[in-house]
Image (tube, rainbow, N blue to C red):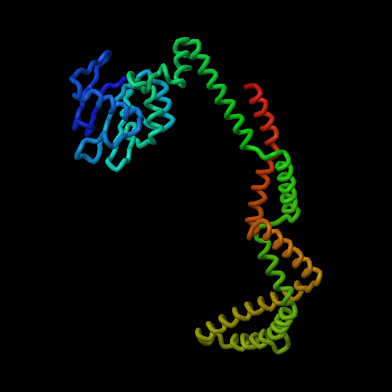
Length: 354
């Protein structure tokens, strides 16, 4: 129901704001008083083509605002909900503004909307009779609604049930059409993912192993240099006339005067501790020399392993962590594809049921 109409700068009307009561409202006046201008203003609200000649002389723009009570207008409310337009107290404010340059702005409760949307929403709110405009009896798209209203509640309930079933059917069909690969594509993708997962699993990768391999490779590649350094160090420390023997002699000499003065005693303690630390170092050198063995077979094994890791990195990621992450994602996708046939069958059965 139209409750209020505000007109600004339309033809002879500079400003008009009037409210309509419930029931029949009659506007009377002499020819040229502006009755047709009010009808033209209502037509603007209903989405009719805007003529710049409607704008009052000397004005740059014209505006019409209509306040509708949409209580009981469930169709209009559904349209507003779909558009995300809020309405309070069952009130819909429709505004249309036209400018001298030809620009037209439409708003529903303050929200800018296209003219087509405004026309669709207001189409059921007002009938204008007299010039064959918005006459429901002549509007083919309203005939079904008239029949439904005439049939009453039973048809309304059947219509709502049919709409719900159609919506469910459409959703299921959409999922079937857009949510699945073709059977050939699905099988091909499953084969690819299975191969990739098996390839990664066969490598039995461990986070951090690349650095360990690189370190061992570095040692094996420098085997001769390492052996020479260990041997020379051991000889200089533990060999005849080596550092350990000479430091031991020095410690023994200081032991004879350590009790004479505290400063001799402190020096004795320092060198004596150094002797034991050097002795410990000599022991570690012997252990390293005994535990180190160059192996060409081990070198080949490590290089082969590193080549495998680099090959997987080129395919699945820059690091071992990336490769394992890819494997996890591939496994999840494989599980989804494997179960998709079951879901497809379920949706197909649901579509057939609906």
